[in-house]
Amino acid sequence: MSAHSPDPFAISARGPLRGTVTVPGDKSISHRSLMFAGLAVGESRIEGLLEGEDVLATAAAMRAMGAQIERGTDGIWTVAGVGVGALLQPQTALEMGNSGTSTRLLMGLIASHPITATFTGDASLSKRPMGRVIDPLSAMGAEFTSSPGGRLPLTMRGLCPAVPIDYTLPVASAQVKSAVLLAGLNTPGITRVIEPVPTRDHSERMLRGFGADLTVEESAQGRIIAIRGEAELSPQQIAVPGDPSSAAFWMVAASIVPGSDIVIANVGMNPTRTGLITALKMMGADIVEQDARTVGGEPVADLRVRHAPLSAIEVPPHLAPTMIDEYPVLFVAAAFAQGRSVARGAEELRVKESDRIAAMVAALAPNGVRLEEFEDGLAITGSGGDPMPGGAPIVSNLDHRIAMSMAVAGLGARDAVTIDDVSPVATSYPGFFPTLDRLTDRQP
Ligand code: S3P
Image (cartoon, rainbow, N blue to C red; front, top):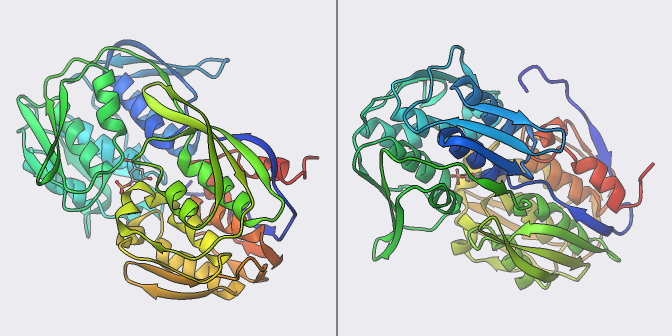
């Protein structure tokens, strides 16, 4: 991503979305599949892996530390793991591109291995705070030399054996939780993470599936997740469900464009990820779950979404961790709703791939949307279903979700919204634009 050439894109209203779309594999689960399989002894198979740049950065890093990872011509990935405790010293810096999840989770893995590793990333990732993982991993014995403010480039040295800790998460972050649990995998004794606010639980579900001794207990302080270290993981067959964070764009697009009627197939419905569906339904969206089932230990359903008039809501702050990546596109939905929506308690948006509160204000305001910015969120006065005026250029800030959210906003714009660079979309949803063309009947 570092030397990429910008890819501009202009979009205005194109009429309804129709048809069926299968979204790519869940990004969080894809990263974890490669990491956990890379630590198992024996060969795992992964079906439905997201082949976006972020996940490929994880694959490259795990290869650099000894895992054998291959993609079959049938699209199935095989991973021969090295075993917990046996990661090898990488010979060059680990290039993380745009991916915060790769960086923070791999820092956790390395913290309890006798390895020195350097992490580098693109301009967006190099601005993101790593102190939130450096703190607990330092308490476990790892050493760090980072760029000012706890940022990348960063070099760390793991400690083996590391020291188990009990750690209460100061921010609601599944990445921080997972980093500590992954460090705990190769640490003698029991490492505990106390989570006052529940966040996505893919690490817990999957580590158990791989045979780790991991328990989850509800307590007055929150969820206590305990992992017994020096674990042995056994290889698995993994089916990665579709990413609800990618499905989010189609849910909002179909909701705001009159005449739309789509089915989004195979969407992960883990309750720690479905906050956007809850919020959109509160706004009056017509989203129907069909064929609810379980795939690879995760709940999955097909979603039928039809256009519906939306009404403004106060987004319940407790939903934030379950829809944290979906706020940008929720803001787009609010821009077409009747009335003033308010979303607060979402200050974490400021430290994502971009400052997503500032980025969405900068993108929506010149296109005719009335907004009020708060430190921890936004108020948006919607059009009541009328088209957004549009006509203004916007910047995606190396942030895939800003680019895709504004492409969705463009579907409701009278004059074209011009996005300066949509190339970051390849980090999480390489097929986004061809799918947009197909759903809007623009297939060549
Ligand atoms: C992720 C956790 C979330 C999310 C990110 C993926 C994960 O980040 O925003 O896209 O896979 O654990 P935080 O842990 O910073 O909330």
